[in-house]
Length: 88
Image (cartoon, rainbow, N blue to C red; front, side):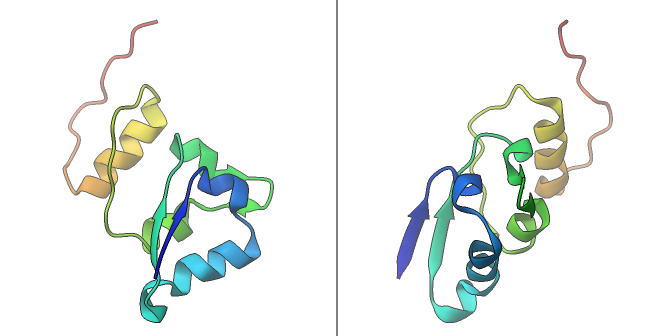
């Protein structure tokens, strides 16, 4: 079974956290999307850890947000030596 959840943070709540955490063991393949890592910090709580811990594939098209870039570098396993200088 496959499910696509666009703008994941808008559907997220206590139930979606449980679904995300148990999906793989139950044979459910989730494809979730969001625009930036800050989208995962919602009124219902911070979903960053749940997404990071329960996903093993990531597609990043581009980002202009330094915090999202730092998170993606960390998830890639590559050691960042110097933070990019962002134009003001």
